[in-house]
Length: 103
Image (spheres, one colour):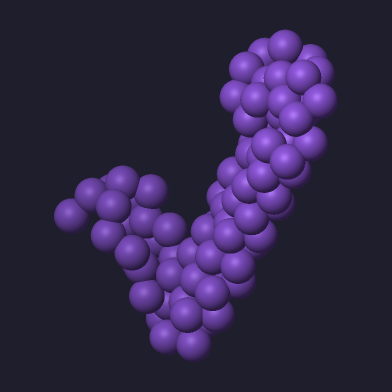
């Protein structure tokens, strides 16, 4: 048995289930860890849009291109795609947290 998991099982004050793996993360931490990871992913999507707008590429560059050519319909589509991506990640995070805490 790996040492971190053995230590976690030996010195735990309560009988928390321990996930197998090199870090031996207790199961109650998993919903928060997943939520924070998805939150950071959502922030990265939003930052990619902003950085692309100033020239770094990605969705923001596409938005800048469409706005510079005065293609309002295409620019609106890009904006809606950005909003849908952020909403999708947020909804996925809420669904997974609910599922993990109910189990």
